[in-house]
Length: 350
Image (cartoon, rainbow, N blue to C red):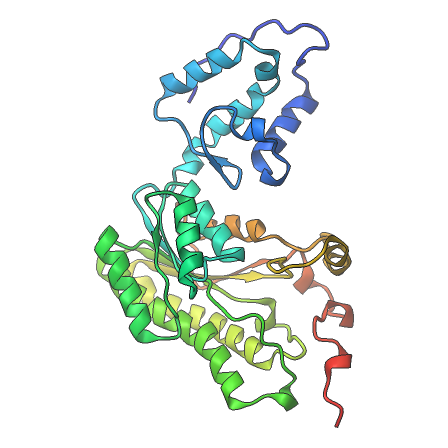
């Protein structure tokens, strides 16, 4: 915690500390989308997804605040610094822990990887595209590792895990996020190759990674596996028979794995995203799609990062075999045609 710093007398109308200004400063800290460049670098410390990486010593943080207090700008943003200090414990929840995130080259996987890294974890960034895996790992810093692999291949998965364990010597968390979400096809136009491709990546890939991780975690008597499901596991999507089947399998596998691994101190849960904006979509289309969500907007990858990371924390130590829904309320409402992304106009004309 910070030592008490005397509050200087602030001239009326110049950087006045009001409830509104404190809320505004806190919003800057919590919402990277709205943070200004000056606010994000105010303390001279890097930020990732709005989570500030704390300084090395309390003394250095006090010195920073002391220097900043000489300007009205600094006084206006003092609540920002205090809020960041209050988050220090949370921002260090995964120090010395090793996390593998599959499908982390973009979207939800990247946001999850960034959040783990911001909280002190050493992250192995998996993606089927080596260039994307390397890009994200480089952005996360020297403690991160690019771990490209096709998760549907056992040989590739084994090589990836061998690489991670050789580099870090341990594994604490696996997030099974890799999946194919761009293969909508009407059931009457389906074929075996389409079915196999989706199930191989979405379900078999999660099995292969979880199976390898579980053997290591069971021996160390600790670990967390988080699988990424979908609303399609319980509420059908048009034109997505294979995808929905794969996600239904993910949730069944999560429950069964949780029972098998609980005696070894390994927890297994799933996250259920709703309508998440992980693909190119113009603002008008995004706003229109967001109207079907009770909270009034499409979700962002960052909306999934916090809940996913939570399941790996000590706060979630008594949670296993559960599916955490993060969907803005979509699944609790009566499903309507407006929710569908596969319109009737795409049905085959027989």
